[in-house]
Length: 258
Image (tube, rainbow, N blue to C red):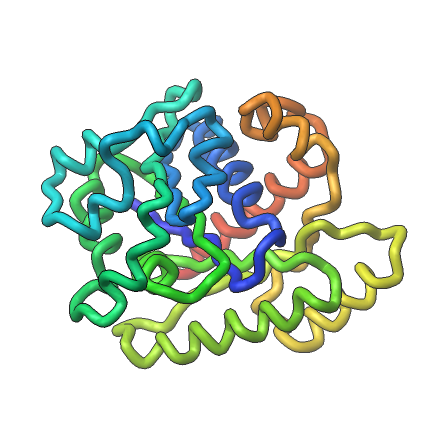
């Protein structure tokens, strides 16, 4: 089982879209996919029509009880896609930093939970909140690779800098180095700002930046309104084509690291 964590300490950069787009493409290829929503806003859950506040079990329960494999499986929600399940979020997650932030041993809750599901799924994609706290720390610690979407506009570079510093700080507690890929998103080739930001991104982070870009594509918004993964809603769109290229790149990185 491979775990990809989608994270950035800036909101609105395409984290949820990236999680859903990659998850949809993986499922189409026959992989069993689990999407984990660790954001209290529950955008990933709502995308698929899951009213998270009506649920009895969610990601929140993993942090407040000692969970067995059976309890975790009971927390999962199916989607209209045969190979995609969701471990949903609830607003209760917003209280975790206050209630558990100083409690020891809380940084590996998600990793331990995913280890119990190792034979159930081929890929797990975790959608993170845009703030550093218990949830992001857990998602990063559980990951085999961190995918960092970054909107191609200058203010987003500051958020990326914070994200890099967070991983640097956390690295000291990890037994293996973080593997990460920065993904330029919301790229608009018609604007000077997008082009200059992309060049600056390559200059600052070089081989850590995926050489492609995810373009602005209204089909992402339309797919969300239809509660469909982008590749199901508009298989031939330029945005889906870009995510296919990203997935091929991630597969290649995976092969090289074996």
